[in-house]
Length: 178
Image (cartoon, rainbow, N blue to C red; front, side, top):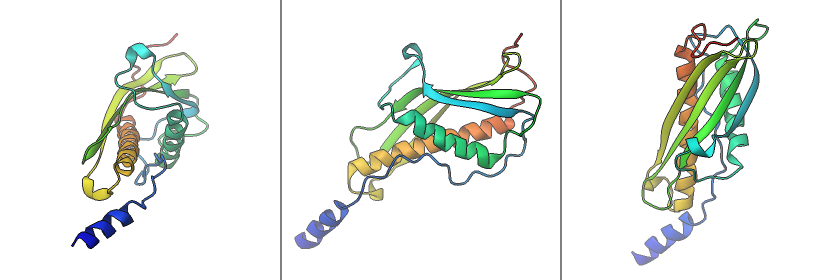
């Protein structure tokens, strides 16, 4: 019995830590495409006054941007050659990753804003909050579960944003421009 337990622990100790991968796997074309062309996409941290718990480093925004770009491209939410040109700005306000535990849960939050480049109107602004949970039976090593919980939380955040943007009416600005 002890030998089997030792063997199980030894084999599970050989697991590799998954890379940060925020590509959402099940993104399909949205129901309500926007009559706007996306010209610029930026992802970064919100100003410190807007931040909640921030347990991450500078490698996160470029990987988040890559996953978001992939989801936007596959969702076809924006259209090319439109008269309205927009910027999408993402400001990360929370990354609350677990230090230890059995079920690893990460909470993330980001403010997504779509801005009309022509007049400065804010066409969409939403704080999207999401979680990623990885149960104990996913992997023996806590670092593997913790990393996967970050991956799942940010994938869920991007998917929730695509769904929210699909339902949004960009013809009704949040704040009018000039």
